[in-house]
Image 1 (cartoon, rainbow, N blue to C red):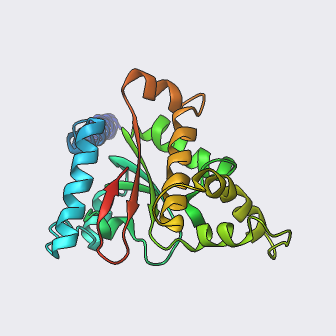
Image 2: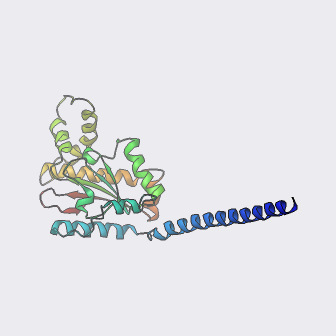
Image 3: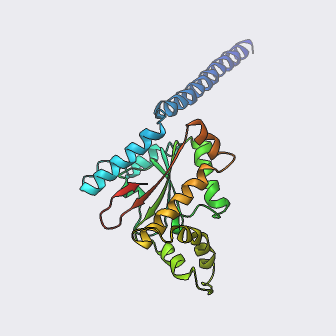
Length: 241
């Protein structure tokens, strides 16, 4: 009996030691995993650098010389635990406007919010909340309001601005949000549609710069830049306003 109890004690000590070793190994593994994730965290990018990188990417796209596809399953898996975008792109939902392609960026580089007419004022919590999330939680240093040539939503606003008709469904409400840009661009020299598209972008930029309580303070502190740009469907060029 004495021998059996001694064996039991030995087994108990051996199992306890093994359990402790396993627990320590698990802890070390968890720490190493955290260190690996933090090691992959890219350094912060300034607003000016983020804008420069986007325009450089667009220049490559225009030349037909893309260098940053990074869209393979492996690239997606690498960002499964976290994302570190350098810019918010508020773009039109138009099928011909694909920010990841025209800026020659890969997965995780930009945080894209798309809505017909790239409207900001009156767009509601879904659009503004998406933008604020990127700023507050992801520390994105740049917002680009991106309009494009031949925008159908702006065309509709121009067509119906002086007409007392009503478009079907929620389309009417969307067009109403763009009508102020059409009215304010009236009488400017140049193409009337191009002027309205530019004014729509400019109004969006000004609205975001004043958006409390998240965006406006960061703009004032110089931690965030808000710019407008227009994408030319024919040439592929993005022109900053």
